[in-house]
Length: 186
Image (tube, rainbow, N blue to C red; front, side, top):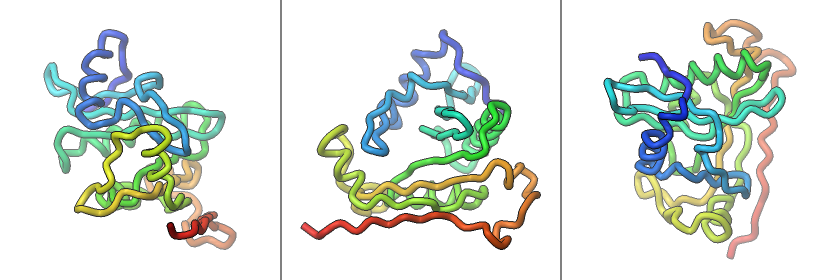
């Protein structure tokens, strides 16, 4: 299973796949982004797209914008994530980050098992995005959990080289800023 960069002739298949996963437009950080406006890696099975990752590189930072696989537990997501890490490293990025939502416990498990660390919690951010940017965001998500907050995870690409080598995560001075803002109830 080898992810390949999107080609112009892949656009229709990419859009159909992302639409199926409600990921053509991504709301995060109070901004609405067209995921197809950014680089993408695709996994194909014969003539069918079975996985997509879109990403944004900005200086030494790479954001994984979308990551979706048609079937879970087949290695598609891991292959896409590994390929995005390689692209980010080649571009000189030192960090890979992803924003997900509080209800997406499967994604939280997936990323943390692959070395990502919890970095930021934005209470109420999804509620705000639903009102201001993307009204089609549902009010409840996976497992019936109310869909309210953004959760950001980071992977240090210098420390995590895919072989779990480098500076130990618990080394002195290795801290993660986890700002938590308090919002009044109401």
